[in-house]
Length: 116
Image 1 (cartoon, rainbow, N blue to C red):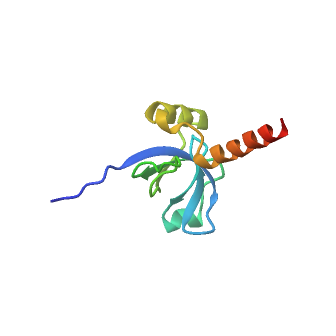
Image 2: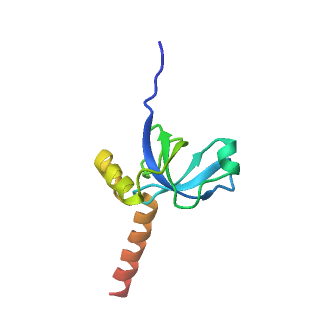
């Protein structure tokens, strides 16, 4: 029996070269930050901050982050707004804020309740 995993792709905005691995720190259109692996030659000569990259991945975690993302190519033909719009159309269920942000919002609501 052959095991096959579904390979998906999406656009991300490159923030910086990662200090933890041969990878880039990137931002997803839903606001989550991920570390996307890349080739060593790409890591040595990273694209400018804010560049749109296409990354391949194996789906989403519950937190809204990508499973095992890696860089496929640089996208010069679209801007960030177009990437966000495309992400909304392809993954409408992933557009909620990541769980990390939701936890912060719950803490703020608790503080407001305590003030009352």
